[in-house]
Image (cartoon, rainbow, N blue to C red; front, top):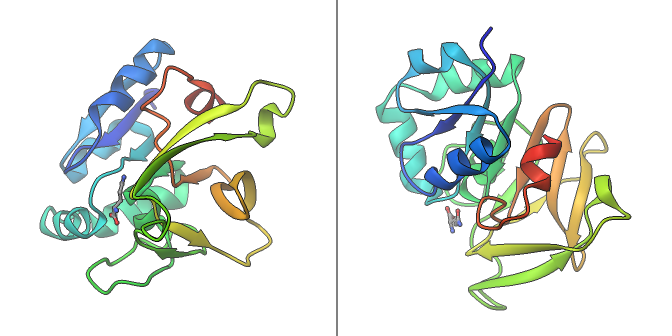
Length: 185
Ligand code: GLN
């Protein structure tokens, strides 16, 4: 199987993931059609607008293919991508893929500030420097499932979670020069 990472390119912030991966010497390709996934060993679902992306996933006939892919291969969901990976979304316009047992509350930091940056501690690099994370109309993700490992928190909220080979992040790791997150995956 070729070591190419797919980046779902239906909508949203996909280009910068390609740049980040290439800075790590990893080959990647944009994915729009189901058969393009056959060449991929992993997939990033980028940030964007989860309701629009959800519609496009249906329109491009990708729903079942993405579910099937996630049963065998790692998926990283960023912001809108994390919402799509959830089991439930508190917004009926999004049909989530149910890749990780969590509930997504869209735009849940609206009460605070629409978009913001914060320094996080990364569990897998606890001795390393703080990670400057950029949150853009981020969702809040909730889960009681003990199989989910929380890799970073903002206040009391889990903002980076891992389940087996899958990762869900509510901030944008592609919008920084710090490549620790793509590198650890
Ligand atoms: N607010 C968007 C949504 O609900 C997500 C924003 C993002 O991906 N940066 O889909």
